[in-house]
Every structure is written in structure tokens, then in C-alpha cells.
Image: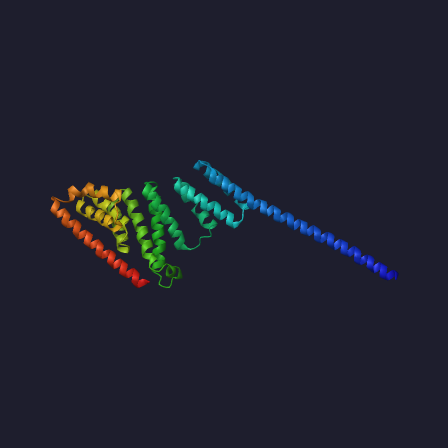
Length: 288
């Protein structure tokens, strides 16, 4: 009987101790969940406050403060920070800083594929070229993107290229257009012409390379060729674009001696574009 009572006492003490420990662990887990939850809420509230700021300089400063403490955030939060940072820098002309953070940006977004990096290089280069800023860096980034894409394109076993299929030519056209525009802004018109002609070979139904090539021919004094490219761009778009309209008007009188020859030229270009669009539509339908 005494043994039974002792055994019962031991079991009771053990049970109480177990409940105490288990209860404490549950409380610790609950506390951890609350802390983690508050961290997430804290991060979200910080992001919302940054978004609500009116001054973009302040937004950039606040994002940079978050980056300084990025070791306190999880992977998805760091990704969000760098996505915002990239957009703020590229849209607010902070190009030097933008180029310098690209390695960190790739790491934060877990970008390891070369072709995705090439897309980013081309996007930044095109922005620089259109703004006439850091043109040497625009050329450097554009050439880097072109080298990457050509390396993959020339490897017939490259699985990364197979995912892109026919889009690889569109990508190459975009990069060569970027380089052509950058060299145009640098007043290196022969190099600009070379890249823009290349862009059109890859994708002759895009209006921008034609327009940019027209600008090059205009600078070189070949007004009839310039007129043709401007007109080609206009007919490809199919609607009035102020830039194209102004360019056509600007070179029209220098390109033609009389109105009749200009009208005949217009009709021939219009017919050429119509045929080109028809071929493009047929090839699209075949690929479906």
C-alpha cells in the first residue's frame, strides 16, 4: 500500500512537472509567433510609409536605410526592397547608383540566368541612351547584353535558348536598337547605322529601329533614305505618332524635288509595309 502511494505521488509530481514544462514551451512558441508576426507587420508598415512619401529622394533614402539593415529581413522582404530600389533609381535618373547596385540586385532577386541579366543590362542601357546620359556605360551594358545573347544563340543545345524560341531574335533586335541609339547620341553615325540595320534584319516589323535609322541618315545628309525610314515607321505603327510626323515633315522637301515623285514614293513604301505585315501575320499563324 505504501509502495502504491509512493508510486502515485511520483506519477503526480512527474505529471505536474511535464505540464509545467510543456505549458512553458507553448508559451514560448506563442511569444515567438507574436514576435515574428510583429516583425512582418513592422516591415509591411515601413514599406507602406515609404510608398506614401511624396518626395522620391526621401523614398530612396528610406529604402537605403532598409538595405543597411537587410540582415534583419527574410529573403522575400529583401527581394521586395531591391525591386523598389531598382524602380526608384531607374525612374529618377540615379543611373550611376543603379549600375553600381546591379550585382546586389541580381543576388536579391536570385537572378542567375545569363539571359535574364542581359534583359536588365539592355533595359538600363536603353534608358541611358534615350536620356542621353552615361552613354559610354550604355554602350558597355548593351555590348555585354549582346555578347551574352549571342553566346547562348550560337549553342544549339542551350536549354535556356530553347525556352525563348523565336523571341531570341526579338531580343537581339532590341539590344542592337539600343546600341544604335547610344552610338547615335555619341555622334558615331557609322556604328549607329551598323547596329540599327542589324536590328531591322532581326525584326523588320518594329517601328523604332526604322525611326532611329532615319535619324542617322538625316544626320549623314541622306534625306531620301531618312524619309523612307521615317515613313516606314509611320506605316508600321498605323497611327499618327508626333515624332514620326515631325521627322517626315522635316526631311520631306530635302528628299524630293517635286510633289509627284514624293507621292509615288509614299505609295511604294505603303505597299512594301502592307506586304511585310501580311508575311508577318502568315508566319505568326503558322507558328500557332
